[in-house]
Picture 1 (cartoon, rainbow, N blue to C red):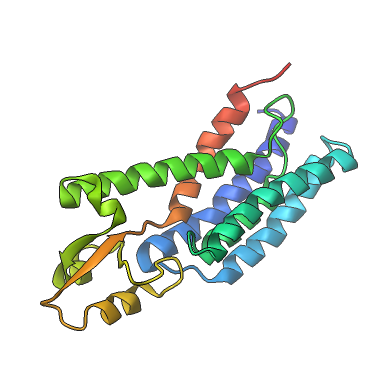
Picture 2 (cartoon, rainbow, N blue to C red):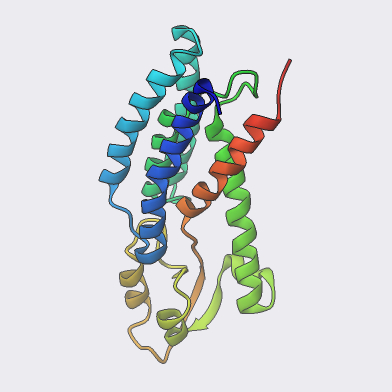
Length: 214
């Protein structure tokens, strides 16, 4: 890889590095402190400015930043509506600042859109697979009645439908819905979205590298 190749790769490496630890925290504890993303956003912005100002005129780069932040704004709106978690917005914001523009000669859209599309497809597919394995059908996508004991011990990524899985503390939401471990509660899958963003990063880079425009 030549010197320009390393320069182009740097923002992507930073994006992967800043996403790994929050992914581990999200999978293990279902919570990610926001300061991780605040620090990552500042670092990513600094790296992207140094990198992309060598590749694009300032006005064009500013337009790319605007488009990229618009993608993060969509996630923010989904978070306000309760469809996604606040952490998902912070992750999208950090990545939109780190990777604001496409690779030269690639697609003309910021990478954040490809990442969110791939991550959402992967999350939906995983949710469907988990629902089918637990319930034998896809009916669990909207919720299924499960024993509280199973929800407390085994179904780590399931949440009571009465809670806002994206904002409630997982353990507290389950305890509120299941005061009696011998009871039952209606629950549905709520997977850690940042893990799918991490998986979507190499897929997005592959699309950027393979899909060229004249």
